Image (cartoon, rainbow over all chains, first blue to last red; front, side, top):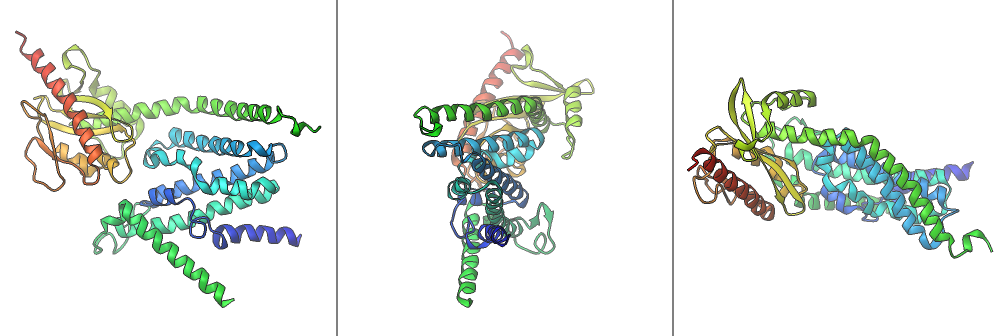
Length: 207
Length: 210
């Protein structure tokens, strides 16, 4: 029981903090830069990615005993693409405005290295439940960093949060247009990664 | 010899897995196809209404937009050279001309509205584009589109509209392009102008047959 408990704890800690895909492994940066100028778009993108990662890891793990080693990566891409297409279709059918906002980035989730990384590194050799948790928490680790980036970009660039005018920032604040534009993503992401990594280093030293 | 070690096993496995996932996807896309199709149609109708001089509530629901479209927009006929006619209370309120052409990444599809004088521009709107978010895709934003509602006119001859650099002063037949989106804007200028010039000629010919 304790072994299982510590495995679950490990999945949570690794995904969110110790081995966070974005600020530790620097994976999934393309979408971290592209869809983070509005919190709402970012939240939908994060939900889509977390769902894809968790479900793909689960499926890869379920099939792991039948999948021949030589074709395992083809199977992984197939599984990932399957979930991404489903999400894309759901958005197109039920939330067309969001589908337009995210543009090609939903389809590009297929190429997000976090998913294949988790499938290859973990789901391929572990049981379904831990694989699902590992995928889900990697997705959540990605989400927290993206939402942090989007929070600063939308607040400083537009003075709003989730489209709702924030006090002070929507009135007295001189909006930084650059935060909404692509260069703003580079600066914000770099600052967030810098801050989190130095926190991590400080904590490690304190141990 | 175990099943998994046979040479044909990976091939057969790949076939089975691919077939299984494909069947589910095909089924799912059939289920959602009707809705996706309706959304696409609605996006077009919304664009036509936005480009026309009719006032459209920004938060109008899908059915409201569709009802307004059905009531006041007539499909192109022989006398409109490919443009949709906008009718309100029995009188002509203007034309909406669809255009499409290659943008920077993919085809840009949109509509441009003209008043009954066939020169004054009443609006522009897009219903399909895949330009770079934050750069080329800014053409769909109100900031760019608002330029086309301020009484701009297409020139009597030559290039109907001229796209100038951002922040340069513009005349009645000129609009500002977007900084950072030179490729999208240059292509859009070409697409819109070709279509407008063609339409201007066709309509003027129909007006004065000799």
